[in-house]
Image (tube, rainbow, N blue to C red; front, side, top):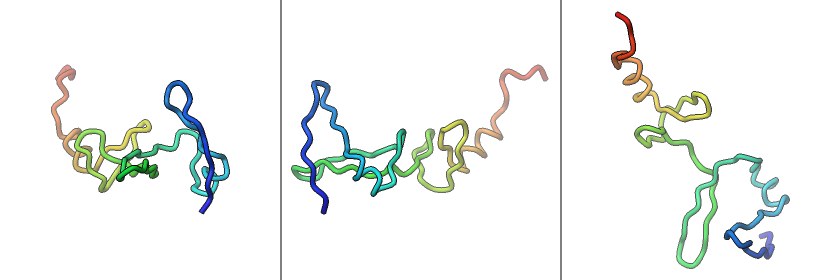
Length: 85
């Protein structure tokens, strides 16, 4: 297991070492979930979730936003209130 020591900056940030990011395949803008387990902070690559319902299943990406298939169907079926018809 690779081990590094880092200090928090004045805003509470740390920099993850490049070797760890490379090993995990994390690049700039990779979404990371942060949680606490006991006295440890756990970082995991974020799994996509629908922006509307939070589902992790059947995701489509539209303009860098994840939307599940069910919500896509609901949106497509919704009446267009800005329509001239």
